[in-house]
Length: 226
Image (cartoon, rainbow, N blue to C red):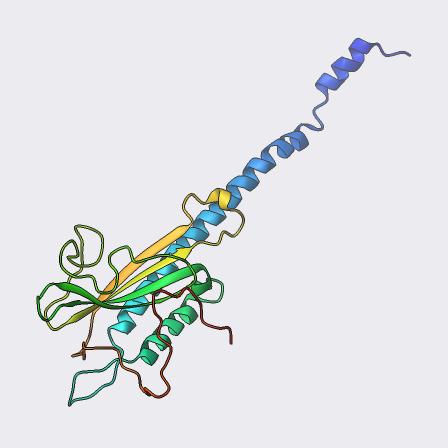
């Protein structure tokens, strides 16, 4: 019994056995792409939260550091700042690798004694990412410098007081691909007024004959691996 060409084509047309497999093959790339996008977006959101927490952690602790004395204003030391920045790296976690991919800028916002104007007395920085402060650099005072923070929502220091202002900028490291990320840079800031009377004249060295490292903002580095 011979089968005509027309019968063969009709049989192929009516055969539904491979439709589900074909549909799955067509839909799978879209499902996979959407799943990867959802996972990447969730991870990016979590990373934003973690970087914000790092900024708050640094500013809060910076407002507390220093010697405790009932006889004189509290002094702060370069070693205190180094410990503070190292602690932020540990808090962020090894998977974040804060200073390898980011930058932390710690500023002491004060009022200048002779003028009463807002004054960025000093800054300390850490991290390999090349990024300058968005709100002012060390020594800024008067003129357009009226405090730190977004325009219209600036933080200001009161006379004989200081605000620890922290900026954290981090280059997001995608889980899968940067094609799912519109903006890879995460930025956060936080500010806390110092919690006790502080010696605002300078940052001290505990042992001037063997000074601790100063985290100046002209350097772009991370802590050495231990």
